[in-house]
Amino acid sequence: MEMCIGLPRATRSMQTDSGSESALIDRCRRQDFEAFGKFVDLYQSRVFGFVRRMVPNSEEAADVTQEVFIKAYQNFTRFDGRSSVRTWLFRIAYHLCVDRARKQDRTPDQVALVDPEEGESIDLPDSRWQPEQLAIDAELMGIVEGAIMSMSDKLRSVLLLHDREDMQYDEIAQMLDVPVGTVKSRLFLARAHLQNVVKSYLESEVSK
Image 1 (cartoon, rainbow, N blue to C red):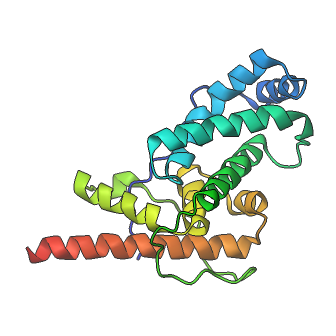
Image 2 (cartoon, helix red, strand yellow):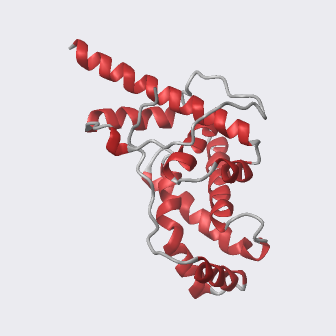
């Protein structure tokens, strides 16, 4: 049985159709600063939301988010369109988060689950955590957020990209350069961990 918990999906700060976004990207490739400002407006809240769950605090998340867009601006001429611009942008964000954690030698407690072998597949329904399906109080939300932060970067990033950013398996696989089966396996492990956390909390509440 899958339990659904609160990972609210991000919404874009502005809406664009595919044509206008393509035109905006073309202008960004030409180092049009005004166009890049609009690009930042389009994606900054989503990038920050992802980064915030990958790093310890909001101040650091803001710094990393700024780095993401600086790097994107510097490298837009190299964006070849083989992946979506969202995949490309989140790939930058993911690698900056991982690199910063390594440089700071952070070794947080990580969920005691074995990471799947590359290419290992698992039959996982393509469903997301729907917050409206489970009423959770502030205390449990804090516990869940803590459980997410305790995961390895590999598990946490897949959970956030799929369940919060609404990315498909193949898009995440392309972004992280891993097989789709590995994405599914990591997502399964991340959800299993959260389900165990919620189950333990609810059982402790009942026993009080």
